[in-house]
Image 1 (tube, one colour):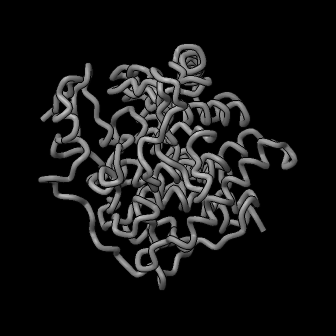
Image 2 (cartoon, rainbow, N blue to C red):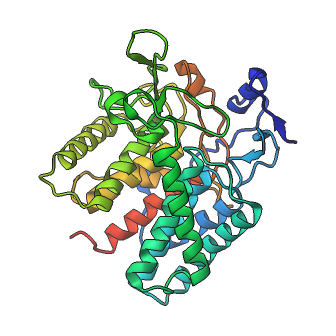
Length: 392
């Protein structure tokens, strides 16, 4: 079944974001994270299970595969959209770790081969139309090109794929700089394959000025400018959504590591301050029985959610490695308790647009999603980097 989505049929679109009549993947934790022992061997076994499980994620019902000019599938591993882009990020993190410690590692060779196979399949299918979400694939592409340059041309990519990747990077960078619509004041409009979202900023696109709540230190999901009247604009709702917040936790240390800003740089100081404030607010509200965070951070009646929790843990571990934080993290074990024997990750909410009220977020179905595996892969690789002594 391929669901047809048209602009004049909001009822069909609403089916994408409700659990009604859907068998959710919300299993109980596999173990009590509070007594779970994680060592290097266990981490490697879990990582292999997560990677294998990620490649098997698909929308078997067809309920969340739909047509909007072209067939869109944000659930299945073998497709090109932002969830799969997060999967490539997780694989690159692991490849970089294993190939740095051992250039001839069989694990590194296997993971790099997986990534190349994925890009080859997507290229053969035809590169998709450009939007703010499909752009996300370019991060892992750029990482591979950069690593190939650092280690010597041909060490990671052959000539054909290096040229293809470089062409992609140039083309997509030109698009996002010069063609992607902007909101008032120059922000990146959250243009997706389905909706233009005119005048909207989402925390998925990391717009700090508008989206941080000055009281809690958490981030709202979306801001919408008033394009007709004289008012500044408004938040979509007062929902403090977990996965939206986890992009902040991850993006700040990633950005600082990429840019290598001096600690005295004002941008560096502002970002580290924002990260510490968010983490300080996160730690007291961690669900004690599961080690996870709720999908609405300030609402313990909302379900606990694994992908956002994995993002929080991954960002915290990355920040600890970079010496921006010094907190202890128990959430990784809580996230690992959601991994099922077949490598699926339970209690992961489906892709979520900006909701107009808090109840919308509480009703998003939980199912297998590529980013459920890949965000946990990112977090586990960060733990392995710490455990391997990168920071003493």
